[in-house]
Length: 176
Image (cartoon, rainbow, N blue to C red):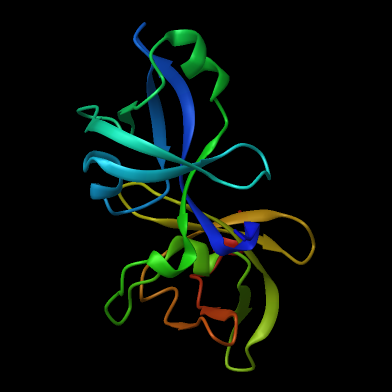
């Protein structure tokens, strides 16, 4: 039996590409081979159980963080359009091993954000925004969301197993 909580999203289908059933995928994974190497993959509609598919081909659109994928059995634009919003997922136990100070996106979301030597709770990590410099989106306990640069100087300590991270924001960062 396949359980729904044993999967993590690695990308979202955001649009069709052309008339032959290719799809555009916005990745949430730093491993490009997941989108470019042919083989078995899984897609998930809403909160249904994942369905196995076969990736025929995948390429990165130059200058954009979007992949174009060709999937077996999806051969026209209409079929591709029906998949908008679906997720590409992988079994949670197939995550690659990371080096020290490397983290999976999935593991950061939901962590408590703490501050200062007392490690006072100030909020929760709600997203990781990828870009030139990664930013943690933190929803503060008072409800406001702030963006915190995800760099060692500002986020010096991360305890995945204990489900928290420490931030030392420069003056004014949390007041923006």
